[in-house]
Length: 238
Ligand code: NDP
Image (cartoon, rainbow, N blue to C red; front, side, top):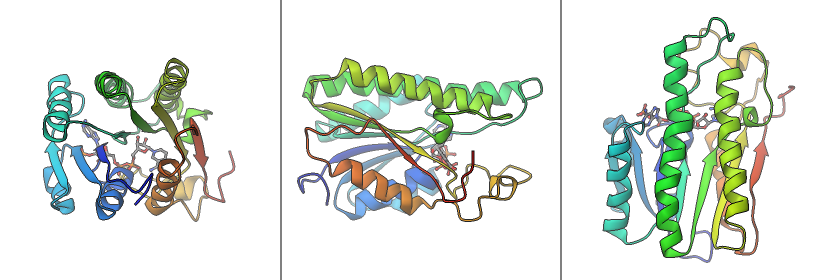
């Protein structure tokens, strides 16, 4: 158990696979209450346990977001952590990227993340505490060819987070961005050549590496802020 040994109420998006799934599994195993969401119900059900509430739906739907937030607060009366893990990646040169898929990525990575943070922040303000943990990326701090659109979504997340940190300074509401390099998940499953090969990252991060990072952030005393934390695999060159 982390952070003063008290069970926490955690809302975790993108919890049907990869990083969100691993965070949800780890926090539930530690006795925290987790509310998990993603579109694929059958994958969420793999986390079935007494302290897990699952809500399947599309996070780009504002109505679904309101349903999720209302459920958390109606059921548990509070929320301690929001983990914004839902995200997608579309890559390609600016002049030839699939513009519709790119727009869908922006709706999820930027609009849905901003909207959910906005909704939960109002509740955090009312209860006087809370912590937003955003899954940004090393690509939220730099760019490379073919990654302009994805990097733009993560730069947007970083900008929102930094402004929020400033706006919330002196309150008990906290915001952190985790900035991983390549993590082995389903994120690149549709790519013809996985970045592990194309970027020569032979030993990528694992979801367990990200879970350790999350626990490190969660175990800090209340006067400490960790606005950004980058974690890279050893072969990361750019
Ligand atoms: P995964 O593809 O494994 O997980 C993405 C999650 O987002 C899934 O649970 C998926 O669930 C959910 N999701 C996708 N679209 C929607 C939607 N419209 N509505 C609701 N949920 C949705 O990827 P990762 O775990 O790797 O990615 C998690 C975050 O970490 C992302 O923001 C990613 O950008 C970031 N990141 C990942 C890195 C990596 O190398 N893997 C590196 C740096 C950052 P479902 O399909 O069931 O809806």
